[in-house]
Length: 68
Image (cartoon, rainbow, N blue to C red; front, top):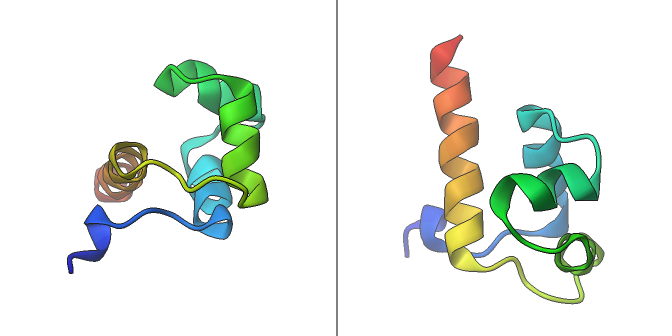
């Protein structure tokens, strides 16, 4: 299976947040249109990161790396 289509671990989510400059759960939540509590649940590993969100964040991180 293509790893870009998989969900995202809490550690990968934290790394993506840092890479993209989101300092708080609220910053990320507002940027992608979800609640802060959803981001909190993802970071705690209580709920998996939805695949579309994981794909979006991976694409943004990848695009940012290519830009530099």
